[in-house]
Length: 284
Image (tube, rainbow, N blue to C red; front, side, top):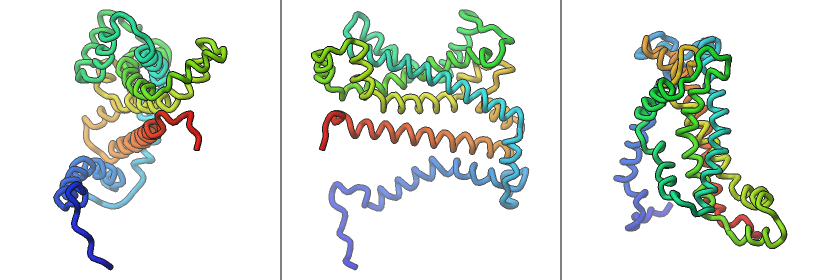
């Protein structure tokens, strides 16, 4: 085996200082999550003492009626808010990309507000809105009783979808739209057959991102949820208030795994769309 050559001036990742820094950052970010997931298999009511491996707390989590109901609420809220967010975000992104109109700059700036405003401020704003401006009726049947939370989730989810879709549309070749018009396609047919296929990867990525954001949200949901509209993160928080047990760790691990899977899928689709941007009509 030959001796490895010294790292070049721009080969930063081959320098031990950079490798040590990256390792320290990775430990800082992921060690708490790994510890939580590991202690979810701990056969002890006290997390600080390892007694052995067990799956009984996952069995308890899956048979906890309140936890299952809260998880069903979270999935329902996330699914409905995702559908609405994708539709609304796609329309806003298409309007900002395609048209010029008065107030476009203001709309573009307002679109970023739900992204940059602290979540606690959004939660308080939603609490005031549903308490004073548009009180949501209480005692409605499921899933109508989740309406306030769904509206709140749409308000902060659709800007993320709009940003992803708009970034995708910057690579669209407008000559394809002009060619479709020259061939007799109308407005809606052009959108359906030319623009939507190009937009599709960003719609999927935006949907997964919106679903993940909604499923994980705690702060805004905490301010807008009622006694009969508990979601999964809020339920886990209520369990933690008494004590951090392996059952809490098991429930948290389930949510972490689901979030990681959805986030990885969204990043994968977004990466593929960025890699193929501008090459949709090319053939090798």
